[in-house]
Image (cartoon, rainbow, N blue to C red; front, side, top):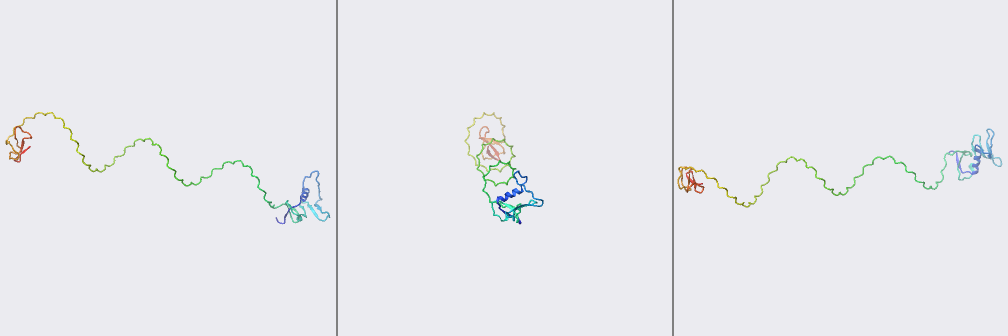
Length: 224
């Protein structure tokens, strides 16, 4: 603070300063009015040393202040004892922490912050139970016919089924027309004997039946 010093001063000096600088004095106050250009001065008992001065300009001096003992109060002054404003005041020791005050009212909810980054994917949960079967949906349209597959191998022949029962005897057919008499037929044909002409028919008995009929083929009788 330059040439200023700080000193703890007796309370009596502070009372004198307050008395000399007070404005609007009450009825019991002592008012001192110096001559123009003069100062209010308090001397020691011998009248030699100034103990207190208040100049016309308002400056206050306590010449003996620099030599006084220290105490718990603070005041700022210069080398000549002039009382001045303090540029800084040293902080005293930190007092004890006071009791915790009551909790204040809850403030309004702040604006919603930005969405945070997506967290990692959690582990897959257990498979849930199978739900009930839904109703059958409508039948879809028939798809196009696929290409014909290759022919499969022939399966084994099945076993012969049982012989069916003999059917009923059919009705007798009508009598056939009377045949014409063939010419050139040799009587009593025998299979393997020579015959002529080719195509001739003969029978070994009466009438011509499949049991006794013969035909001449390439000059030889053949049984029909």
